Structure formats: C-alpha cells, structure tokens
Length: 380
Image 1 (spheres, rainbow, N blue to C red):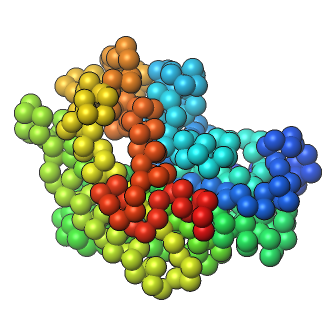
Image 2 (cartoon, helix red, strand yellow):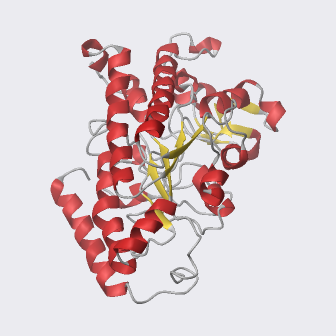
Image 3 (cartoon, rainbow, N blue to C red):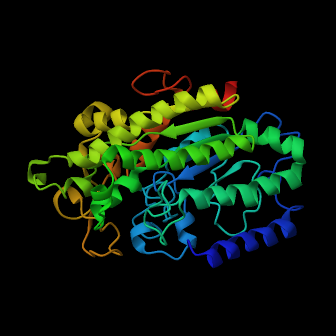
C-alpha cells in the first residue's frame, strides 16, 4: 500500500470514477449544494479506532483487517472492516450530526464527498515507519484528501464554495496509539536512540504538519481523541511480566501520558497561531480507564478482559481465528464487555464514548478544550 505504484493506481481509479459518475447518483446520497448550505461534512483520519473498512481494500495481513466473522456481528450482522462487534464512535457522531454513515475512502464506487469521507486505516500511525507497508499512514491519508477530495470539491462546487465547505467541515483524528504500541509488539530499538520525550516530539511534529496542511486548505474545526492508557489494553497488558496480577505495562501508558500532554499543549498553541482554528479534545484516557476500573457503574460486567480472543483476559489477538493464533473464544453478550477484542472496544462502549464526545462539557475530565463535537458541527 505504501509503494508509489499502489498509491498512483488508487488515485487514478478515483479520478476515473469521479469523471464518469459526477453527474449521477441518488438524491439522498448526493444532495444539492443549496440543500447542503448549512451541513458540515465529516472527514475522518486515523487508525483502527475509526477505520470503517479502508483496510479491506489494501494489500495487508489479517492483523490489520477485520473483514471476517465475528466482527460486525451485532449491528451490521456481517463484517464491514470495523474493529468492533458493531458501530464505531465516528458512526454515532455522524448520526448525531444528521449525516449518513461516512464511507471508507478506498471503497470502490464512492466518488462523492459532500458528506465527507473516512481515511482511517487500522495500524496507521503519525509516523510513516509505523507498520510501514501494511497500512495507510497518516501522511498518505492526507495525500488522498488533498489530491482527490479537495480537487473533486473544487471541480464540483467551484473554488469559493469548496473553500467554504472545507471550512464548515469537521476533521476528526484518532492517531498515535500504533506509534507507541508498535515499540512493544515488534523488535523496535527506537527507544535506544531517542528518549521517550524525544520520540513523542517526533510523533507530535508529524501530526502538527498534517493539521497545518489541512488548515492551509480551509479546514478550521478539528476534533481529537487522546490516547488511552495503552499499557492497560488486554493485548498489551499480557506482555507485562506481572500480567498474572492484572497489572498494566506502565512504560506504554507513560508514553500515552506524555503524548496527551504534548497534544494538549500543541492545540493551545495552534489556537493562537492559526486563523479561526477551533478544536475539541476528547479525554479517552480518563473515560476508558473509568470503565475499565468501574464497569458496573457504566452497565458492564467486565472492564479489563475482552469479549473475543483467547488466553488470559482474552488478550491474545486471535478474534476470528484468521490471525497468527487460530484458537479464540467469543462471549455470548458483547454488551457486557468494554473490550471487544484485545485492543478495541464494543459498540456499546463506543456509543457511550461518542455521547461524551458529542455533548460533554468543555474543559472538564471528558473534554479537554473549549468545544465538544456538537459545538463544532452545529454552532460555529
């Protein structure tokens, strides 16, 4: 996927589809410009927390795909490529914003972007090197946005209206987890070369470049999901030599903590530097930790172990039996679990988080910033 030839082919196919279908399509899918005067498109960037199926269409392994049973078993009744039993936070946010489900960019036959599009790719990081060759990294996601979507909108709407549309849009990011978890899941020696703070600075620097580039092309409203306590994910927790005591891998969680602090400081600076820059930061770290430690308070029975997988906490990443380990078990009722598989959440957990992202009070434990997502979609 990361090879230049693959990128060129994808962009070429999109160009062909755009030119051949720009004048057709149902009204419900492609409303008129007049009808859309006050609708904010939704552009989604990031990793498996938000991937709606892009990795179905790239040359990768099942480690970075979820297009097989039992993924998707509850809401969709079939696997869509989402890493959950059902919908993701971005699906609920789209619903609350009165938008249809936002399709994956790489899905064939979707050359219309007035409602937005989803670029997220499971396994992706802010760094090109993170799982390189198996995912659509954030820089490539940006290139798709610039070369295809921005160009399409300008041709469809004209330069002025396209810029207004891009400024109304909301840009949601979930990125960084793989840049850090990959250090523990591979034989990485990066932390022998860089200190933790230096490495976090490199990740944040790449994200800064992406944000600035989108802003340069008209983007003004940005939503961010900070990183969870990575060492407490079932698939990382079992790496900890003390995992028999259900302890978290603190080194991984520390990287997430440093990242979240740097992200918050970055956004405060960008608010001062970039014209009309508005942002929302959802504190996934605290919200997920609360559900892990006090599941019954939120209607769950299990907060630390996964519904689907094998081994202790079902932390072995085998859900579906198509990865390196074939053995797996799946729970009878995913609604009782916070975690769906070794790294991802159930639809029920995602909905609870989406509700907080949409309407949580600003500058609180839920929302670290001046706005929630409802503010960005409706009131600005």
